[in-house]
Length: 309
Image 1 (cartoon, one colour):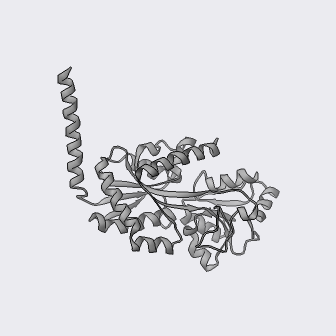
Image 2: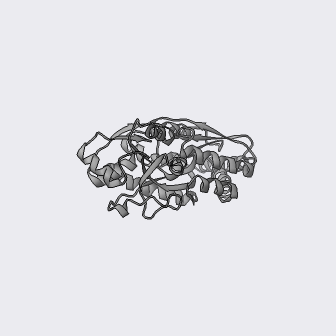
Image 3: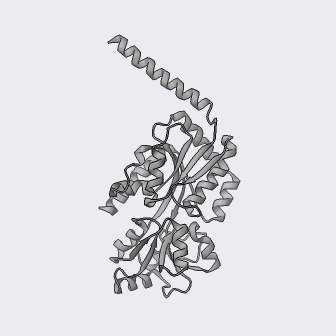
């Protein structure tokens, strides 16, 4: 019995020493960051900007791999299964809290060690500049008149932005799936669809140029980047939603490596370079450390579960 206990303790000490040695030399090679959505969208932009700001701090290059499909499920599942050595990280998004509850993704947030939350933004409802819809109530009225007929460019399937609006107003739109905002926005601009919902930063160029019209932002207060777009609350509609993004590593990644990465991402998010990029792109930095981020995701999973069920 004592011999078995001694062997167990010895193995535990050996594993701990191995992890510490690994962390001491970390990073010894390039890091890969999996982005589960297409190039050019908001998630891709945030991931690339953070990688660019963090590479100098870590002293190694961080390459981006866009692995798309399944509303983010393909890329996040791929990242969760990689070797837990700190050399493959994943941009995790709100879909990690929703898709598993719908049976659309095998892996969950528990398959990751969440390192840092990076950003948090509300959704904005967008239509082409020449759309007959000028307010959210115009859109809702048309949807009630022609159920399931208004074409909605969906950045993910299912789309929780849309579900919040549909449930609050008792309407149904025709959701057409696209691979993120980088595909959904052109679909609206080209009049292949009539409306979409993305975060402000994903469409800030088209909003500022006047190509797209914002009907309403799904937050408690107006957003400084698009001050002329009213909230849904101002229009008498109680519907608030948005998205978040962060960085995760496979769940068995040593804590010592997570700590190295966390400190590096803290510095990257606080850098003038990253702040300027996010401000220019109309994206809000919302840093949360590992424990706070993990707790946030658990709570959001409960919130989404109520919406799903």
